[in-house]
Image (spheres, rainbow, N blue to C red):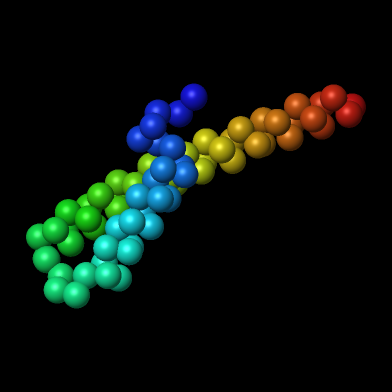
Length: 70
């Protein structure tokens, strides 16, 4: 089971929150904005990694199904 920090749905929600923060900020705090960008980069990297894992899992399932058909 994936760690909570690598949960795709959680990461996507956090990315949406960061995006909303930028959209809704009238006066942008540059320092806080920088921290949010750094956080977003980590979330994106984790999400890409998790997507690769999910893709690999689907490929394994596909191979198993095809092997059962043979």
